Image (cartoon, rainbow, N blue to C red):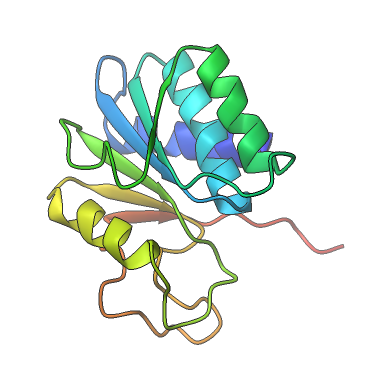
Length: 158
């Protein structure tokens, strides 16, 4: 997750032609994709971005996403329960809501959160796959995230 989050932050910095002083909202689910997004939030802040995280709280307080959320709180990064914080003033959103393991149809709260993300009109950078897209079939939910870019993360098979 550290490497994934660092790579996402690095990409976002380049995508925005510098991130210092820009407002970024990271939308994070409770799974590993959300954990990647929360790590990216930390690295974006280190790069000078003004970061807010809109999170789906994990039911498991020992999950990686929950642990990274705790770290962000300790750093003073604002964490709001999704979909709160999505419609606010932001220059870019990072989509860490859902990852490659989703199955359609989507269940709440995902469709409402995705609609709020798309309604901002701001560029969205997705992690692995835009939320609402089935990575196995390429099929998208009616309201899948309309990402301007996707950072695909993978490890080389040896």
